[in-house]
Image (tube, rainbow, N blue to C red; front, side):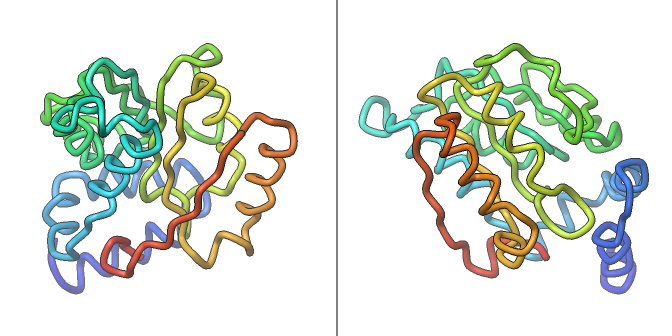
Length: 206
């Protein structure tokens, strides 16, 4: 997809008003999503993967493969762009979660996921408490996608001492309640440490 067609679909994705509408749009976009992202120098997946290693303070242990042996959930995994970057850092136990079966079909072809599950991130996740060492969520906290509500579930399925790394559209941070939700997790010690990093325009697709 190129030019006007790509912009039109992106506008429709951002304007989506339900999870079912989002699912259908991403199913439609799946085959050209990666090539479309490459046109926009979409570097957020790489930065998210690096943030997992940095957050777990593992870089000094194994500089080449710091994520080896860790169980990681990739929420809103799409076609697998974050999974590929996690794999480059040694991760082999990656579970991809996405509402779009079309996107998951493309992600399967990357061969970096241990498992892929069709998942509505607005619902309770089908995992026990503390299942994962880390959870990533890249590109889903934006127009027409998710509000801050899933953060509670993200924190639940990550073990004590683990990390959640998520990208949030900057204008959403205060306006859509993300700052308030993170503060509430800190208040009850479900989250014990928090770091906010601003990404440049080129790392985002919005």
